[in-house]
Length: 252
Length: 257
Image (cartoon, rainbow over all chains, first blue to last red):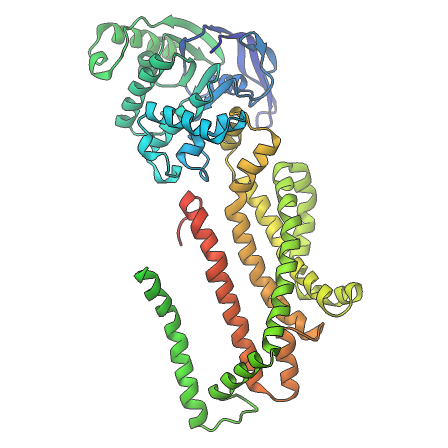
């Protein structure tokens, strides 16, 4: 695990519908320390997914720089694991093979990589599902696979793009609690994108509020861990922090 | 297992009824065998054909042409379809050609094919090749373009290089469409084969049908028609359909019909 530095990051592209250049991300700077859990929160169209796609290397940035452990990002790579809103599992591979995919790409032998995959599946309570295909699982189970597939490759930074936005509310809360548990156990560096303020405050060490492609503020979350919804629902500090972030996002 | 057996029996039921009607009514109305044969004489022709080896020879020739033509077509069509699926430039450049040639594919190629390859194996295999090639290429292209961008991104961010992207993502991702393409293409190829064999060869099921006509041997004609139909059903039900079932439906990429 390594740190992530973003300096004066910008993204400008030509919008054929408008007929002019549009700035989706404007001069964003952000430093994420090793082992930190940072949530970037903002409304639709604020540029948060664009930032994540640039860090992942899926799209090029047009200004500034992105450094992972001091090295500039050029295209996608296994140092940055990604969890997608659409899960993006390989439907033709079993759950075990999905999780073993990253190690396989690194050239890890079959016995060894299946051992790694089994360890991570156990971490997400997925041992029973190892031999099944993604289509046979519920959405919540599929996203558990998505999370451990990214983790099993031991990336320097874990990038999560609204990963729980397409599961039902109860499952979402369970997944959030499990994610904080897994994070405490493995301590990966995480950047988590969401539009859900409560989710951001629940998960993060730090919440970065974004609007119209600019950083509004950077708020430290000093809630104790382990965190659970039962404990935090009526917690005054949680409400105060959520209120502050919500006000920031809505005022912009 | 019991369910599979009963569904197979149910599939055969209408054919049994047809055979019974045939066995009863053709003798009852005393139909001229030059217009339509008795069931018994068709069976007789079948037994003779197997005994003297001619039927097996015709079937073998036809199947060999289909196999060679199809394999050659797949060897070129799948890589080309993937290249088209990955590169918008190659795809947009070649698509008009594929539109044009997929209309032409089939029997229209026979005259020129016989000039190029002579009568027989080459010309007919070429017709099969055409029938399979254009459909499979187009379906492979379609299959690659239906793979969600995020799935390709996921593979890239897990460290997949160009080769792994091809073998681990693009090929399996396009497979449902490729299998559909092969099924459709072989259907056309099988029809084209019989027509081509009537014109451009001296062995094969189509030839067997066509020559029998000259001698008013309706029992050989009907036997040939039955063999053509049954072979296709066997190929489709016992080879192509199980491939689809075993992989694609389980992956949830195609809904069970």
